[in-house]
Amino acid sequence: MQERNLLEELVAISPGMEIWWDSSPVIFGNWCKKMLAKAEPGDQDNLKRQFARMYNTDDPMSQLFRGVTTNPPLSLAAIKDDPPYWQKVADGILKENAGLDTESLFWLLYKEVVRRGSDMFLPLFEASGHKEGFLSGQCDPRSAFDGEAMLKQAAEIHAVNPNVMVKVPGTAEGYDVIEELTAQGIATNNTLTFVLPQLMDCAKSVQRGLARAKANGVDLSSWRSVITHMEARYGDLGGLRDAGKELGIELSEGDVRLAELAIFKKACRLIKERDYPSKMLSCSLRVGPTVNGKLRLWHLEEKTGANVVITCPPSLIDEVINFPGVEDIKLKPNRIEVDPPKEVMDKLLRIPYFARAYDENGYTRAEYNSHPALVKTAAAFSKATQEMVDFAGNCLKGSCFTPAS
Image 1: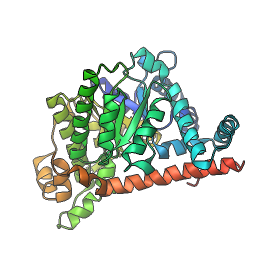
Image 2 (image 1 turned 45 degrees about the vertical axis):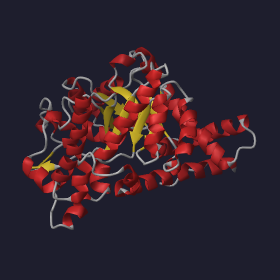
Image 3 (image 1 turned 90 degrees about the vertical axis):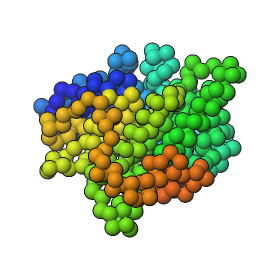
């Protein structure tokens, strides 16, 4: 095991890059214990040093993790990590709020997960002058197509802590919400985003909202904007391979990864060229592909030099730390500026599913809500939310309940 993992190596050659923890921070301690328990004895001291560099309460400005992304599935995972603990939290909420129904308890419990996680990153938020140390708290996915409901939820989520960034979906309704929140000086993270038209729609919505905020003298000292690209969810969940097969075009795992990277790289280039005030965020990353018999990490390798956020769930960090053949990964400078090979792009551009995703005008705003990756991801997030609601319902009955896997 290397002294510094690949995420640390990546940041070292990429000025402005931020690594975020893609889960509730409240599980970080238990995750470290689990990682140590399965590690080889000779690697444990190294792992402890890496963990100390990831999250450092004594010197937050030196730590690897510069922020946090959460969503309902990740908040549910926090509850699954220690159900008896969260039963006690729910009991405390019930004692302080008589007469709560299931949905009301769920919402207060969800905000408490957000609060406890964001508390852990307040030291970095303060030390960085309110520019880092944000935690993204997401609007209820069941309201993804209801702009009025999302605005109400966003106000409550934002009020949890000064370092809570509101996560808003890339639905047709979501971009009006993002523009309005930006105009109020509220930090946002655009999620459920898969195609270039969404990413650019967000950048323009934020730009308009920011202009309104400045014109009205709104305090922007704790404001920032990130735009998430859910990379593997676009390529795998959305059905890129199937779309190719329908046209007789076989796509390898490498082709799919390069398609995802092509969209991300183009978005980064356009944001930089047009001086949009947002920063791109890369999520839903995968290990792979296998090239000449060796496993690669293109989702990370191809982002060297990028002034972006990369958010990593505990499972991916585990894979990175324990990556087989890590000595074969040689990070090359400024790969973010290198487009995929022409022969790959020519093949991909023959597939309308990709060609439209790669074209800034490939989808109208009204068409976002029917994109297969958005439909499937929204459904999965709503299901996880319902599991949290079910947990709250059982708490009302006084029974400790482990949410369904």
